[in-house]
Length: 276
Ligand code: ATR
Image (tube, rainbow, N blue to C red; front, side, top):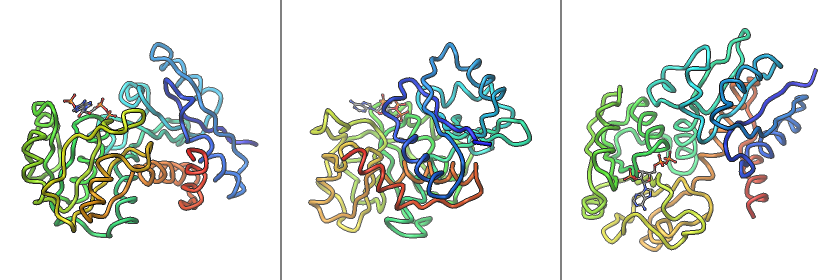
C-alpha cells in the first residue's frame, strides 16, 4: 500500500521538501506520497491526531510549528528536547516520535564542504533565534567547545548559552564586538534572515578583519550568495550557503523514515533546478 508522508507549516507553498523528498521516494522505488499541508496554529493538535488516524508514516515540521507541536507527540528525542524544536516526526509502533535534524543537517553539510573534524576550532554564530539554537546545541552535543554567539540583542544570545545543557566555553557578544575580533574565528555561521531575498544588500556585520583561512557559512540559500558570503569570498575565505543544511536535514529525515540512504547530490540538483 502507498505510504503517506508530508510537511506541515504556515505558509507551506514555498517549501522545497515535497519535490525533493518525492523524487527520492521515486528514485529508490518506494511507493510513497509526500504532501505539503497548510496547517494553522489553531488546527495543529487536530492535524497531528488526524495524521495519526489516517496512517501517516512520517512528516516534516516547519515554521511556525516546530516548538508548538512538541506536546502533541508521544516521544521527543533528547537533542530535540534540548533544542526545544522538532522538524521530523516518525511513526514508530503507532506512536509519533519527534526529532530535530536541522543541527545535524548543518554539521553534515559542513563536513561535506569543509572538513570532517572541527571540534577544536573556534566558531562564531551570528544570531540567536531558532536556527542558531539548533546549530549551537548540536555542535556542542558533538564535542565542540569554543563557540561565541553574536546577536543584536545580547541578552537573547546569553539566554541561549545559559539554557544550553551541553558543556562549552561560550560568550554572548555584540555584533560590533564580533566585527572587531572576527579574525579569531576559524568558523563563522550566519543564522539570521539578514541578507535574504528581497533584502539582498543587507549584512549583519562587516568582515574587514576576517582571516583568509576562515570558513564562512550562511544558512540562507536565496540568494545563493548573500552580501556576507560575497565579502567573505573577496577576502579569500571558503564559503558555503544554506542549501547543504536544507538538503541534509531532509536526507536525515528520509533515513529515519525508510532506513535507506538517499542520494544527496541528486536531492541538491532538484532543489537548485527548482530555485533556478
Ligand atoms: P529563526 O527561528 O529563523 O532563527 P528568529 O527566531 O526570528 O529566526 O531569529 C531571528 C534572528 O535574527 C535573531 O537573532 C534576531 O536578532 P534579535 O534577537 O536581536 O531580534 C536576528 N535579526 C533579525 N533581523 C535583524 C536585524 N535587522 N538586525 C539584526 N539582527 C536581526
